Image (tube, rainbow, N blue to C red):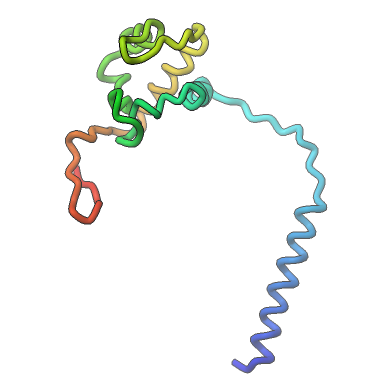
Length: 133
């Protein structure tokens, strides 16, 4: 390709980029869009606000003070989890969650349980950093 063709292509892309940018910034958004959150989404927000990931793992990622909670819903059940959330332990604080927050956190743990299996203690870590089951 000649330099003239290359420069024409370059300027065409720059012009298209500027036109598109101008279009996006001039477009008026009304800001009335609302997003309805499911109970699991609200539970995830509580998980993040209470910084549960600092102590607990999800899919093998997170803190090491508490257990991996990816599949805790199917292995322990709702009543067991609810008791821990409401009373805490000698290591885990009682967060004084109301009934709605507890049910939303349970919905989050249930949805996470349905998405996959995590057993970090049963995974094989290879020398190159990859992981096998």
